[in-house]
View (cartoon, rainbow, N blue to C red):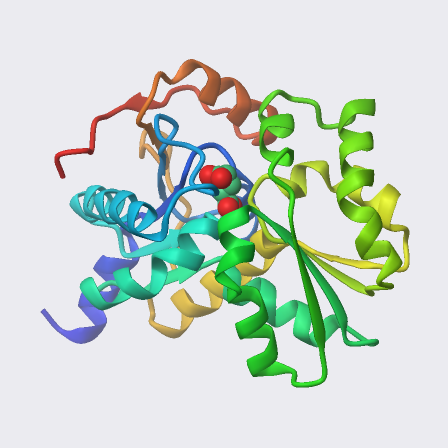
Length: 280
Ligand code: DGL
């Protein structure tokens, strides 16, 4: 098969996206918006969430199993739509597979490095992502004139999963987490966990209008589009009805996932299939 023919065929293949659970749907939402022709196979590891308080070895092992699952679906690329997995596992997995992979950390770091005026940047994320220091590393590679403060906000994930997106409890906890970043006078704040864009309005209210909030999900979808274009892998034709354009898989029961998905993705997620990947 000629090179052009080959990439035309490959471009029809789905994009694999994975996360520890539901949070990666914020990235899926952006991919759907920015490259609506694409097919997506999503895996949410709902049985083993959260990843944010697990060891690097465990997150690599879980991520490797998911990547094998997605490869078996013949995906043309894999988006690691989880900050923790991007921080801990992406480098390792890139060495192991041939298809291109993209994580959420690098795109978010790039925007923050460019957006800051005062050089004072805050990062909020899981314990694992903050502990890995990966946002600092990527931002400092791009902009030497910065000071970065990381703050783990572990309670945000369960608050979002409980649907308390705009609630006095979320306000109170956010105020406790964010006050020190306000006192440090940051001008840019990275929402370094997939769940946080869903409480963006609470974070905005507390941080004030003067602070740029960076949503890595948006940037990741933008970079994904660029990468697919560059490699001749962007899907040209819209998917037809009955194409099974979006497929969702989870490792625990699907009910809660479907309800959550439908609350943030307007497209209408009708089903998600529970699968066991632990032997993969
Ligand atoms: N998806 C994870 C992240 O972006 C948050 C949830 C978890 O701890 O697994 O880091």
